[in-house]
Length: 208
Ligand SMILES: Nc1nc2c(ncn2[C@@H]2O[C@H](COP(=O)(O)OP(=O)(O)OP(=O)(O)O)[C@@H](O)[C@H]2O)c(=O)[nH]1
Ligand SMILES: [Mg+2]
Image (cartoon, rainbow, N blue to C red):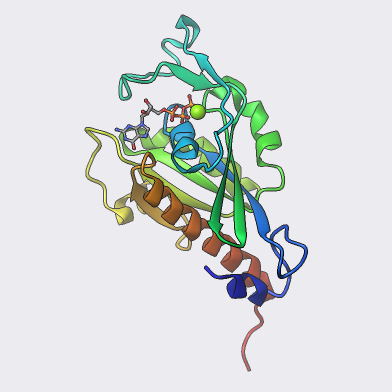
């Protein structure tokens, strides 16, 4: 993705003012409980990330299982926030959603004004991601799907994941370990590219 690419849309899609000023955009990091949203923001943020972690209590036992992530002791109760300068002239503000269902009412606030979303999935429990995917489909917000790397996960191909999650053909699907900064940077680049493509699409006219 280049800034010429941004300018080529002809509609100043991000929140920049002048060609010489950095452009900025808001990105949502979403997905079900414990799928790695906070880990992603912490891996890439160039500022100390703002997190709102609370200790998991017995109240969530039987509702949100940590059996697949035994090291997890906290959960996000409001949001995560981080910033990354993806290119010298492109700053992304990352907003992670809370994963527990009882906090999903916050998603509208967290997602407002975003150009796109990263939807994390855990291949061991794909059905948990249907709600988050439906959320962004209903709002026509572009997203990329990231299958986070967990131990003991089934060896799904990207094609398998696309079919199992009933994704549209243009939705990018990648497998990654979101604790790895370089992998997160690549995911965000794919998302920005995808969001720009989706913004251009309505302006396309049939050829002669
Ligand atoms: N093996 C493995 N573990 C991961 C990966 N990403 C995150 N984890 C671990 O899985 C857990 C995920 O925790 P979080 O990053 O808090 O997940 P979250 O989606 O923010 O969780 P909630 O906010 O509670 O919904 C942590 O214990 C991480 O250390 C990964 O790619 N591989
Ligand atoms: Mg979290």
